[in-house]
Figure 1 (tube, chains in turn purple, brown, blue):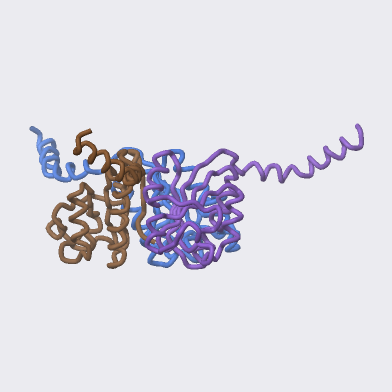
Figure 2 (figure 1 turned 180 degrees about the vertical axis):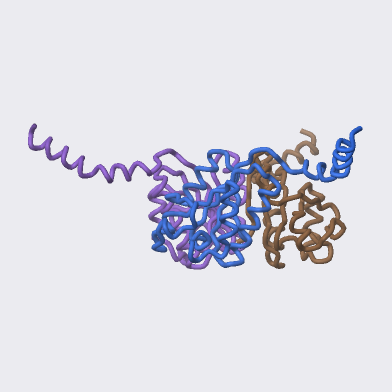
Length: 142
Length: 142
Length: 142
């Protein structure tokens, strides 16, 4: 056996516990609409933590995060406590959407949102329609 | 062209932005079971506001509002802070249901409910069965 | 008619209102994933009460209770305020699962859990997958 092949086999053998561990990660496509309604710093951090947990367990999950009511600040450029967390999740394909009803009440415009964040006319209508299309629903927060 | 027809065409042209706006309203039938568990005045007003938001975006939505636990007062004739809101939504086809388990604990009778409100034996059983029948689920509140 | 048969018929007749009452209980199989995220004593008691309510209305319901975040203590041998309630529900077929992400953060091990409680790698992933498999979703708490 060539030394290179032997080395590869050895590495494969040594890494097998990690391979086994990797197998508990679920590679299927999952679709989830994730509702956030709270806005304190601790709530924002919890939401980002939960989204990272979902992606760790289900790396191919398609996630749409709907922020409305008190959760709007999570998505506002000048107010968010988790801008880096949002931006990182955006680059990994997570969709963040702000509710236009909430934005109108808060006098926020699309320019006030973190770059890459979209809007939906009604947070609740969006959550209803996503469920009809087979998406799972998670309400964030305690 | 007759002046009347010309006027109609002009009005149609002028109103086209509104027609376009109207088209973003979704005329499909949507079915949603809406769970309310909080009972402070601010929670009651939020629930009514959210229900109106849903109907604005989805005018043909079939909505069943399930009030249980601390949310029972929302439906009680002598205690509700939003009687007008409930009555208005009832006339627009929204179903409001009080949980009989909660009513027993609160010693409330059907006569104590706002006129037109129905009851269900168990709020949670109702929410489960509705989801099985394809209804979307929204948990109200922050 | 023999006295014994007559007595049986009389008892049957007298119990008919209770038979009728029994018929409003739904004997179908229902499957529900029940998310608990709060951990105060009052929250723990409310969760156990709600689970008992579900089983009273839907005696054949298959229930999986997912405890994560602040709700982990509900399932910890040395901290739970509702050990008897959990144990009783376990004997009636309810599944209780603790989130391994939460356990790691809390430095809790499987030995710390009430006997019979299982774990899942990620509470939210579990809730998503159950919904995909047709389970109804209930988020506990107010």
